[in-house]
Length: 327
Image 1: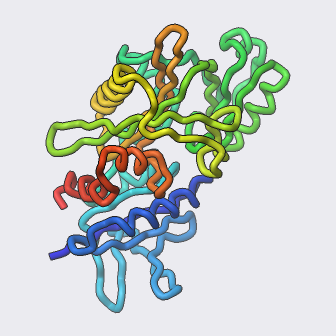
Image 2: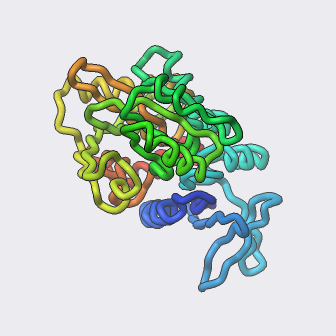
């Protein structure tokens, strides 16, 4: 008997459209001989399934759907919501209460990794990889620009502590530009991270668990941005070159992959994740950037690129994710 899978997309953040794109690609690459797939769109005012140009509302009491007088319950959820509520643990906590298995990290891990400051502190404590120097400020506290300027050297990055796709992020080269960058980041989140700039090559590595114990890291991608840094336009509007697999030595590729697997394990991640790094060539140091627990899944996204570079396809990826749930 085929299992009912909720492909959960949308969300409440500026990454809504990216999530919808990802869901479209996933829906085309799930084995419909094994699964009935229902794309459920989450918006602030409505959670719904679209059929024949109609929106059928989800019953949030048990996350069920009623079609033609038939009640449909879900055996599992494949979450592809970027940002809130699908990447910060809220949706995971909801599914935990309903006892519906899902394909991402747990609620706790999602929450920890979504807050950049908290995640940086935890990763730093592992002593596995370097972490850039940073500090944070809250919207309701008095700003001391002199203190920030002496704590973190210019150039530096100002970014919302929670959020993705580099939305609200700025690279700042002088004190005069610091306040506008902070205000821009506060438009996204009430806590802002200020982080030292590390000059180097940017790499991104997908990772997932296969079977009961094996963790595999995908071939790393090097990201060469045509903008000043890997911002929204670079990520989604074609203003970057993504080289998969990265043209690096076998030793450096293995180093990125092994570091990725160690962090995935120590952070207690699950599902498919993507971990980003900066490699500073002048002193051969690898720096942690961030963990993406619901990485993009459009055909052009980095993880699908890496899966193809492995000689696999995304059908294998989504089948593996669902099999991890016992489905």
